[in-house]
Length: 548
Ligand code: ADP
Ligand code: MG
Image (cartoon, rainbow, N blue to C red; front, side):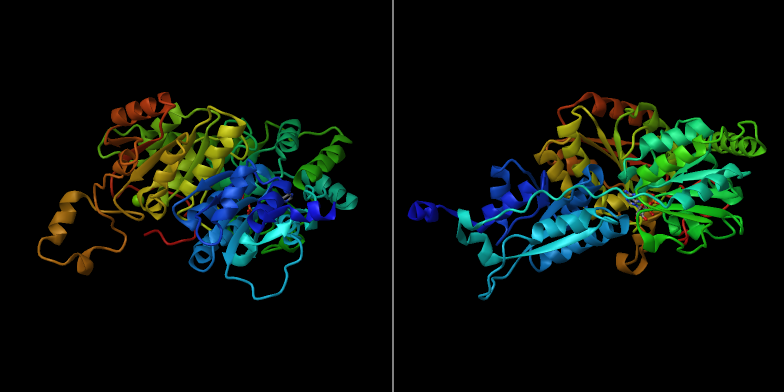
């Protein structure tokens, strides 16, 4: 019997794959090479989906989006050295976004020491999803991958359990409820932490039961639908500036929320912070109340407390009136820009036409400067965790990886769903070759490249030609200019997808209609806009970066 048992051997690669499977890993993104190829093959044999990408950076962005969408870490598989270095961008971005991620790198061969059973895996999974989620790295020595080990000597650790649910202190919940009740101009801010926490049900109840105005952050969009009557997204600046009580549900007071400081806020605004990370509480401002815990659980605590005394925020208040008026005038201003018939098109015209046809249940992935900022105000989200963008780190180059991650999840979980990936022309360039990945796996993605011939702004063809008549390009081309009239749609046709080059609203409408009707192929619509197009006038600049 002993002899029989000891004969059965299994490779290190298979052990690793089985360890991942035991941890419920469904997807691996990566680029194979020595020594990790065998791991990818072994994983596929166990039913884990392997998506081979064209650059580790995009692979790592994709894996991190899996973490956000599924609450279990996505895996990025890379070779050591350059592969790992490329993946660092994705690891940094995942940490900044608080998204779980597991990066597995193959390093050089071990010398002699033995490597303990695979305890590193469950530990890495646990630290990626417990507390504030983030990135983890597991290093696999090359010789381990091909090592043969006796099957009976392996003990796989059990699947790491979902994080325990923590709740806030009862007294803090009482105080928070009374601060909310006494607010004259309350505002709820819903961040991507609320989306990650799956808190949509409790937060929607809080909004509706007490008739409270809410504002989603960029990726908080959809936790409560954008078209909800209590969404004050269209009066964002006004709402932030004059609120006297702000409840933050998984949203940090970083640059996205202007650090919580004047002039964007009242100097004496009372913040109520709900977050799972104790270190985050009190960052930049002194909050009136801190609620440390899981957002869904804490919101339920708040609901229970508020329920004790009948109360709702008066719908006829001056605050609601102010917000509604501002929303109306802002919406009118963007509609006016959108209705402009002049060519090339402006951002608003483009996004209004896109919004008209956007399927309600689609994912919206977006990156770019104005493309992302303006797009966010026009393109609506109706479902939680259906918007992915440059995020906390402001990372450009995430779009195609995120779209690919959303597409593989959608294919498995809700077939028929589209991923609309709205890219600036500069943003598209970071990972443009992932179009081949999209075509190889035939993913339900429509790429919209909003093309203004540059980073922030560019030149038209005539200005470009004039500029280069007698001079060398490197001496005179402004650093933010890209080649005018680039036919990015040909990147898609090169791999068998559909490409459209559009210059008018009619062409845009038609190509989008055709793209949505053809479920057999991905598309790329290259939308030429006015190279100098900008945003409508703002009271404040939305971003703290300089407006180039
Ligand atoms: P946004 O960009 O939407 O403003 P941030 O990334 O700044 O959002 O903030 C998200 C916050 O949510 C982080 O501080 C993170 O610690 C917190 N968070 C993540 N998951 C949970 C959870 N399950 N419960 C409570 N807070 C969470
Ligand atoms: Mg551009």
